[in-house]
Length: 333
Ligand code: SF4
Image 1 (cartoon, rainbow, N blue to C red):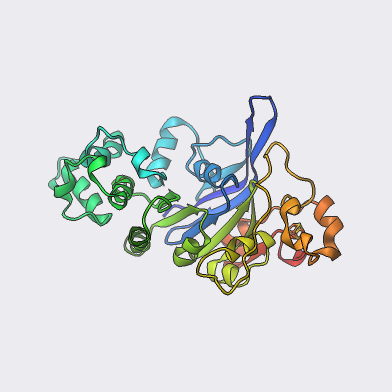
Image 2 (image 1 turned 90 degrees about the vertical axis):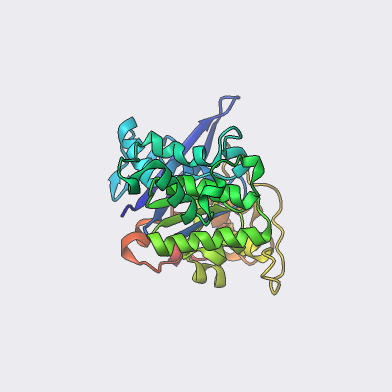
């Protein structure tokens, strides 16, 4: 089974004005078979860029993506084989499905690209499409074959996208905001589906989300991202019951289920990635620095950058490792 890993991944873009924007600045993240990992952070934190890098869609300016410990081969044939094993499920199912394709066509498309169908009845295209739709909870599958996206509910569209990925028999699913556009009741169904797929197929799943509440419901492990770096990571229960980074604490304080916490409203937006702040990149918005909790380390917050959190600690050294990049907790970096 495949393990996919970003190691010190760095992604840069050149803006129209010629400046270099650093979208990923040394990000480490591991996704293993049978594990659900949530990658959380505000919009603009770099989550989607990291997800795209993990499936080989985003060229790196530095660092590596590794499959089972070996650097990813970006040659077209090797990349195509890799993408069959590590599938990206896009957000916005309405936009991701071709409105002129039936459900059958949408699910069969990837299988045709990878020539998966065989002459064997069990391996026929129609059988594989049926099986993928059924695995995604769309039953009876044949009743949906000739439907178009506009004839489906939001939850059904999301399931069709997941079926399209499952048709390729992947080992890792990377789901970008898989339920953000869905009603609460359908959200629960799609999350339950991801959990069931982990159980029945041993899938590894990376859920990219801005919603810490969702991460709490589904993930074994969580990685909190801010301005291109993972700033806190560890087992979900540990990170969310005992958040140490002021950014995680602020995100958690506004989750509706956490009504016992005083909401912390973060001031301002994530800074422009062409101008990453000196010292701790979160310091201009840090509530602990603003309210004096970080007074003893204030100078370091403004001037001293923090180490990049290790993905290796998660992978081999300490499976329950809870790391945080904050001068208030130097022993956990
Ligand atoms: S290092 Fe300082 S500024 Fe950064 S999160 Fe910690 S306390 Fe806040």
